Length: 263
Ligand SMILES: NC(=O)c1ccc[n+]([C@@H]2O[C@H](COP(=O)([O-])OP(=O)(O)OC[C@H]3O[C@@H](n4cnc5c(N)ncnc54)[C@H](OP(=O)(O)O)[C@@H]3O)[C@@H](O)[C@H]2O)c1
Image (cartoon, rainbow, N blue to C red):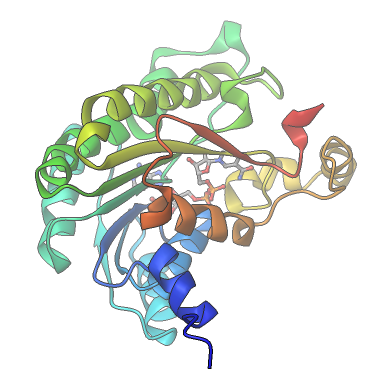
């Protein structure tokens, strides 16, 4: 008889999130919802954070339907007070988080010459400042406990301009640098910080683009896989980055884009 452990137990050693607590902003929709589901099914207790209560409740029901422990916090991450309250309420649900995923985001992209203060401020607040503030709130505790995972959802527009990148691309490029700074600060004490970089993913965020079949086809043609992304495409990469297996992966941008950026 071989004493080789079963593949399931080996995989569990590498990737299980059993006993971990994850906070996923934007966990009520699109990529964040798929990531919340994946982390929950991999064993984590999951707190989803967003504004709309009905979508949050649906996400919690979905997680619980998979047998996961889940809770929701309704908060506006576009204000510093909202972020501070969200952080305390999220930590109150299952304890201080081991994993933070920043997926909440807005995509307001007027032409550069028409980009007003309001759009700039709203974009930076949700897309960049909230991830910074939540990282500052949770990162030091993770470092003290010797384990943490900070995962930001960036965008290919952090690396190239297209479809009026405007303030959006700037905020997403900021996340790439934020992950590197967080990695520098806390990786020596077991906290990794990375970004996942989607291409074009069919979610409510992109309703305007998704409504244009010609543009959808053109964007799919820009990938090497021949199709646009789906929220489920982020499940494996998120579980990997959150897992014990990824302890030596930090400060990186991981492209989950069907090859969009490879040519
Ligand atoms: N879809 C793509 O092609 C694509 C490509 C590159 C990057 N991304 C990035 O991926 C992330 C997720 O996008 P998605 O496509 O999954 O979009 P989505 O389906 O529209 O989800 C966005 C989420 O963010 C939450 N949110 C927005 N503003 C918020 C605020 N002020 N306070 C709290 N929560 C807020 C939304 O909930 P409420 O509205 O209820 O608050 C929702 O849960 C975003 O950061 C986006 O920039 C998406």
